[in-house]
Structure formats: structure tokens, C-alpha cells
Image (cartoon, one colour):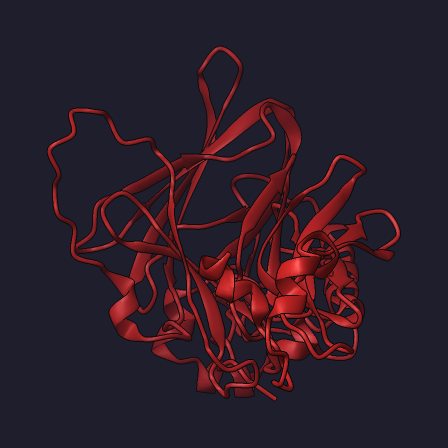
Length: 350
């Protein structure tokens, strides 16, 4: 069982659904109780206005729909407890456990506005983004870009369709340390000879583990153009072979036997198990609202020679291709005396 460190304590005092959502002082800084007031730490003062869950420390549990749905229900209850505005938004540190330094934010506006934000931290370039969703009166998003272990100044800005600013909010947030190696936080950047302008996107590193059951938390690393880590997404094991996007959902493998659907609030909304198969390096969208997945049939004595379909609607698994049926003569020409026969990687002999 692989655990991630507990997230930082909170600064607001609420208690919801079996004590899973906890905090220490209210948004005005007054003590929720005498004990909380006496124990307030420097980090808690810096993170005033940011709720933090007493979150699950087992990554396998994080990637369970019951857990994700329980967190969603608690957030929905909190959203309905008062009116949140850009002057007093609901902000929660990584509530779903899917982005180490991410922040969930929720508020409403009277008129349709678009939200943008800037993250500033000493020694780093400012990071500015406009969130997806366009102009709306209900704003519910996951903010990315905070620097792990640093005090980040985050400025939210709402603007109407004419570009006029209608409100703003600024907070300071000392983000948790990385789950992975601290050296991941900043990469060395070398300028090349190209005259093309860099797109304002991200570079993603899909870490490669050779052992399925390693004790470390495996992660996806997301960098900006300056080589600064802006998002660390923990996964269960193996590696995330591919990131697929459809609307506001990102699909990625969390292990050799599971693909997750992540929405733009950081919540896992669907999980797809691979049954008797293990992932082999890659998967794509198929034409029948499915995933086409390179796979190993774990019940056979061969490896990495199947292609399966996983329905995005039902999760049903169908074997589409057994490569031994396509390359029968070649397969039969090989000496199959291994317990896990990886014959496809001998393709240079064809």
C-alpha cells in the first residue's frame, strides 16, 4: 500500500461528513475553538482562507469512486452552506488528492464573467492562465501552477465580455512539498536555434517505473516553458502511458490495470479496469466511444501481443486483435519455451 504525505492543516473551522473536512479557524481569522487557536502554526496563518481535507493517505483509496464521490458530496454541502463570491470564494487544497499543489475554487457572480489568475512566487516567473469554461455566473475550477514548498501569491480576476474587470481576490498559499524528488521542481532549460514561438502550454513527463508494485508514489510531472513544475499528479503504479483529452476531461492510466477520467475540478469521475489484461505502453480513443489499448493477456503465456477495446460507457472489455493470429507463420517459427513469452519485441527478425 503506497501512501502520500498528509496535506497541510487548514485555517478555517468546519466539520462535515464524518470529520473528513477539517480546519482550524474561520475566514476572518477568529479561532474556531481555544485549542485550535493555541495550536495555529505559521503555515496555517499563511494559508488563511484555504481549507484542507484530512485526506486519505493511500493512493489506491484515492483512485476509488466511492472515495471521490464522498469528497464531491462534502464539497456540494459546503457550497450550499453560504453564498460564495469572488470577494469570499470557497478554496480547498487538492480535495480529491489528484494534484499535490492544486487548489479547488468555487464562487458565483451576478453577471457572466471569465476567470483568470496569476501565481507569483519569489525566484520564479509569474504564471498566468485563463480557466476553461468561458463566461459564466458559476465558477468551479481547479487552479494549477503553484510552486511546491513556496509561498505563492495568487490573484483571481473576473472580467465581463467587454474585458472590464468586475472583481478580484488575492491570497497567499504555501503549497505542500512534492511527493516525488525535490529535484523535479525545476529543470535546466537550454535555448535552441528555432525561431518558432513556444506555445503557451505544458510539457509532461510520464515517469517510468520498471516494477508494478514499487513502494514509491508514482507521478505525472507537468512543466511550463521555463522548466518549472506546475503540477504533480500522483498515480498508483507503473506509469501513465498517454494523456487523452475530451472536452473538460483528461484520461490517463493510473497503473497497468486502470484508466481514470479526471474532470477540470480535479475529481475522478470514472475508472476503467482492464480485467484480465495489463496495459502495454499506449492507448487511444477508438471510433465507438471506446479506448483501444495495447495489452497483455495475463491468462496466457505470451506478453504484449493483444489489442483490446474498453467501452467508455459500460467499461466492457473486448479483445480486438491477437497478434499471433496476424503473424501466425512468424509466431510458429519461434521457440516458445518462456513462461512469459515476449515475442513481439523480436520483430526485427521478421
